[in-house]
Image 1 (cartoon, rainbow, N blue to C red):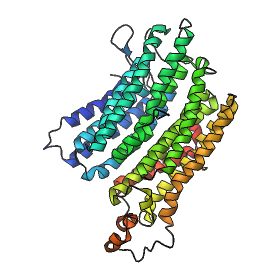
Image 2: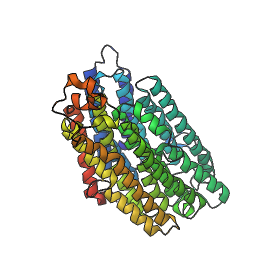
Image 3: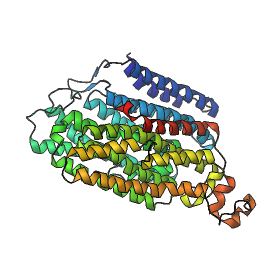
Image 4: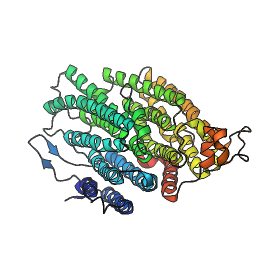
Length: 494
């Protein structure tokens, strides 16, 4: 078995094995040790594939046109490496976070399996392979949202599933016609596109639009973004981190493949599909920032932020400009690291204090300084303040937009992105300011746990807060450092 296929199958098999553990034998400590070992091995497998330059896998033929094959390219490698880093660190964070949660075996089993589907996406050599693993990823990640089994979790997971399947069926419609008119019988990804000139123009436009909109459901583009703010608050924090930082990028990768490898940038550029996508994308950037600015529940605020920030990447892809494309790749990594930090910080706060609303976090920076400094650094990166991660990506996206020469959008895009950056500062930085500088009215010296009842819920976080354990804190510190590193050396991803 070749290395690429092994990197896809190994996490799937390791997750299934964990599910087969007998309940009496599957103690929490044993589950955590097993999961840690499997996550490290999977990371090493993927890293070996990248460093050794693993070539195409041996294809698995289902019939004459449907073939499962893996053929890594540089774009897929970027997505794969970012996925593995975030997934492994968030997994280690989970060991402490899930300490008092039920159903640890099921959670970690599916947490192990999802990267297998994601590696199938990243390394997919043709459209059928990509679509098959895209659907598989949806089914496996569904259980991460469902984990708590509360009414809210069940409804949120069903909403996630319905949205995802609806988008996938839109992709499936286009996929039929792509196979019919592809120059390759197996629809292999080809730079510049795989569609033959015999495909009717109207059908090409329709198929292209439906496939892009279908993948944009996972990426959270308006008006298909509704599952994100519903799923994130009910999922465990490490699951929210990977949903926001990684799972949504599956939709981004799908859109990238459709534009550059299925239909080709020449077919997309200047078409009505490009105009529709640019309009929806900029609406999403602004709308997501506004909704985040108004939201008072911390994890839901971060979910709306993801809706906005992922559309920065989509906007860059839709401009079909080389500089903007480089910016998009940098933002894929920067956003994954930054948003994981933010969700893991939120999860630590909720885990320790039980507070879920932003107004309850006043003064918390005095009790959780390391965690809140990581939150602040990540926030500055998401806003786009140099030299933190996020500045370089947004700079290249804006420069690429101005160079693209697209009427109206080449200038409107940077304006909307700047407004969104200001709104991002408005919904992230006040949390840090109030955490470290609670003001004269916040009498921390006189505050005791016994006085908390009369003081009100806004003092609860301060009363019971403390730094999380090292299993939670070290992943946050490493992801924060990576977000800064990407801001300082963005060229490594070009």
